[in-house]
Image (cartoon, rainbow, N blue to C red; front, side):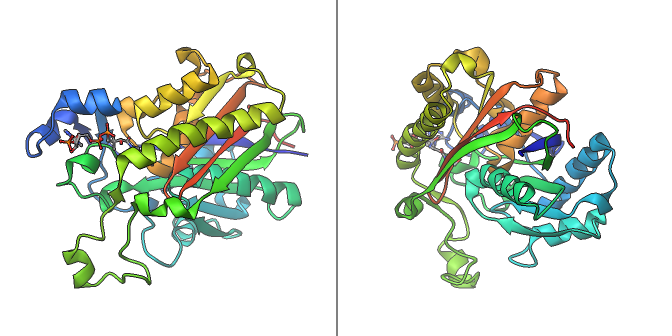
Length: 330
Ligand code: UT7
C-alpha cells in the first residue's frame, strides 16, 4: 500500500514585483539580487491572507480530481504565516471550501512544511486514518518580511500549492520513502521571535522589530547546502538509486546558488533540476508544490517518473522524499 498525489495545483498572486522595485528605495541593485540569489521577480499578495491563496488552488485541485469538497476527510495546512495564531488555517480553509466532513490541523516547519506535510499525509492514508487529505503549503511571506531590510526583502514572495493525497492504485508508485530531520540548535539563525508566548505581540516587541524574520544568511546557506545534499544521498543509498534514476530533482527554492550546489553534489545535470526561484522567489511552504504543479501543467510528468524532493528551513528542519509519479488511485 502507498499514498500518492492524485491532483495538484497552485496559486500565485497577480502582482509581480521586479527587482527594480527594490532599487527605488533600498541600497541594492538588480545585478546583486540576480547574482547572489537568481531571483528576477516575485509575487506579492496585496490584499487578503494565506487562506485566500489556498482556496483558489484547492478549488482547482478538487476540479481536477472531480470530487466534491465533502469528500475530503482531512485538511493539512503547512505555513509559518497562518491567518491567525488560532484557529488553525486548516479550519478556515475547511469553512471556506465547505469541506464539511473534514478535520484538520496546521504544521509549522518553515520551508520544510510541505515535505513534512507530505510525510504526514502519507502516514495517515497508509494507516487508514484518512482517505483523501487536502495538503496545502502556503505562505504570505510579506506579512512577516521587513521590507526595509535589503537582506530579506528581495528574497521572499507569496504563494500557495495544494494537492490531494490518497491511496495509489499501484503500491509500487506514489510516496515511497523519506528522510526527515530537525536540529533546534540552528533555530537562532532563522526565526521570527515575536507573536508567540515567548514574546507576545506587544508594542515592545514591535519596537524591537522582532515581529519580522531574522535570518543569518551565511549560516543558513552553509547548512542548507550540506544537509539537503546529505538527505538526498541518504535516500538514494537506501533506495539503491543512481543519479540517472532521478527524473526530476525538486528542491526548495531559497537561493539559485544553493540549488546549483546541491545539484552538483548529487551529480545531476541542470536539465533535471527544477527551478522556479527566478520568477517567484522563496515562497517557503509553497515552493515545492508550486514546482510540481508547474511540471504537471507543462505535461512534463510521466507515470513512474522518480521525483526527489528536498528542503531545508528554519528550525533547522530538513529532509528529502521519493515520489514515483502516479495520479491514479484505488
Ligand atoms: O528558505 C529558508 C532557508 N533560507 C535560505 O536557505 C537562505 C540562505 N542564505 C542565502 O540565500 C544568502 O545568504 C542570502 C541571499 C540571504 C545573502 O547572500 P550572501 O551572498 O550570503 O550575502 P551576505 O549575507 O554574506 O552579505 C554580503 C554582503 C553584505 O554587505 P557587506 O557586509 O559585505 O558590506 C550584505 O550587507 O551583501 C550585502 N547585501 C546586499 N547588498 C545588496 C545583503 N543583501 C543585499 C542586497 N543588495 N539585497
